[in-house]
Length: 305
Image 1 (tube, helix red, strand yellow):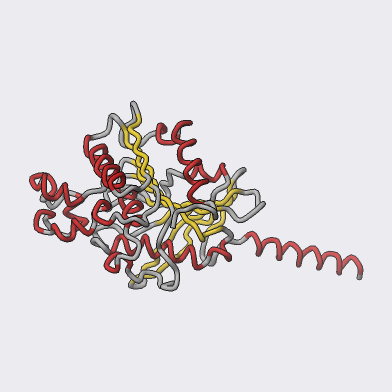
Image 2: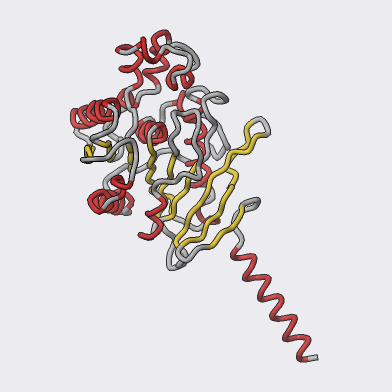
C-alpha cells in the first residue's frame, strides 16, 4: 500500500511539474541549454486566421525578465517571426517576443501596424501569466520590421494607427525604447522624390500602400515615422550598414535630425563594412550600446514616459 501511494505521489508530482513547464495554450514548448521557447502563441484571430508570436525566455527562473518585442523584415510582404535578430538578448536576461504579422498582400497599411500594436497589448495583458515584466517594453525590428518598430514607438495615441486587433483595449501600445536596423523611416519622402521607382506595382511601397505612392501621399505621410515625433516619444537607436544601399542611411539621418530638433534622444550609427544585415549589428560595440540603453529605458526609475 505504501509503495502504491508513493508511486501515485510521484505521478501527481510529475504531472504538476509538467503542467508548470507547459507554455500558453496551443504553443509548442522547446528547451535549449540556455532558453525556454514557446512557439506559436496566438495573440489575435482576424477572420478566423490566427496571428501568433514566439517567446524566448532565459532558462534560469530567477525573476521576471524585462521584455523586448521584435518585428522581422521582408519588405512588408515576406519574412517570418522565425528570423529573430535580437534573440541574443536572452543570454543577457531579457525575454524576447518575435511577432508574426500579416503581410502587405493581406493587410495594407495601416492594418499591418494594427497587428503589431495588438501584439503589444496582448503581451501586456498576459504578462503575469506568461512570466515577464511589461510595464516598460522595448521594441526592435530589422528592415521593414524596423520601420514598424520605430513607427509604433512614435505613434502612441494616434487613433488611425491603433486598431483593435486582438482586443485588450484597456492596455497601452506605447513603448519605452525602440531599435531600428537598416530600415526606412520617411515613406512620404520616398513617395514624393522617387515616383519612378516606387510607383511600380511590384515595389514594396506600392504594395504596402495599396497603390501608387505618389497618389497616396496622405497615407505615406501617415506611415512615416518622422511625421509622428512628439515630446513624449521614447529613445531610439538606428543602426545602418555603411555598405548598404543609400536609402537606410538617408532615412536614418532624417529621423536623427527630426529627433534632435525635438530635443529627443536618438543614436544613429553607420557600421563600417556592414550591409543590409549581418553579424556587425550584434558585435561588441552594438551589444554594449543596446544593453546600456535597455537598462536605462526599462528601469522603473527611467524618465521615459
